[in-house]
Length: 302
Image (cartoon, rainbow, N blue to C red; front, side, top):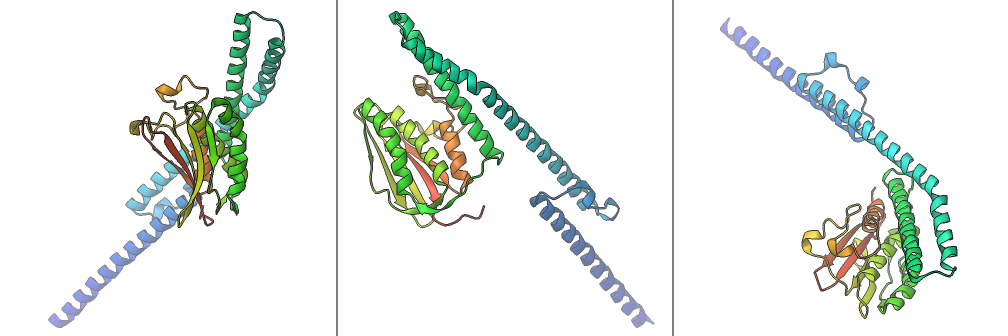
């Protein structure tokens, strides 16, 4: 009799163990399905039946539901902001163009020295406003996926040469030496947007380098990336500020005397990230800066 009881006890214990393992496996399966749905942005509150969920599954379901709702609200706000920026761009495009046109016409008239200074100031501010609006529209559309980059394998040299050609006159006017050497190599990138990112780096280099200085562009090849490096002999950037310069609208104290709106480096970082790359800076006050735009050498898994 005691042997029979022992067998029953063993069977009951085995059943309890198997039932516990089944519950754990079922819970893990449901948690995995929830997390997979959340990662795929397909999680909805109606996907799971609370009556058959454990306490842990129920809490995770509620958390993911709240996260999903929050993500939809954030995306809705981004879409609304993008719409506002597009509307602002559309509504201000003609007035700003007219202001620039009238300032050009006014500059051709006989004016006092003070009047000429006022005309130049108006034109400069109108151009700054125009540049700001264009940069905001581009950034907003990149962030919200309205503008999609199309990276493809290609030669880097043509992009570098086009970008440098745009800044040769400005560099010469300021008394700078602008060179592009060792710019060969291939990478995966969108030519149009990569050229814009490189132009932002060149614009800063020319802007913050004193007359008599040097700006040099070169391409360095690594195993996974090709880096387009823009080196200048300009003011340099303290280490404490280097992380902030890529933030939207950030401008260092010493940069306020220069034209700009503080969005070029932010846009450059967005362009780099959108095609699987990134941007780095190596700089020190009084020793110039090197900004490196890293482009993947193989198609990244986006």
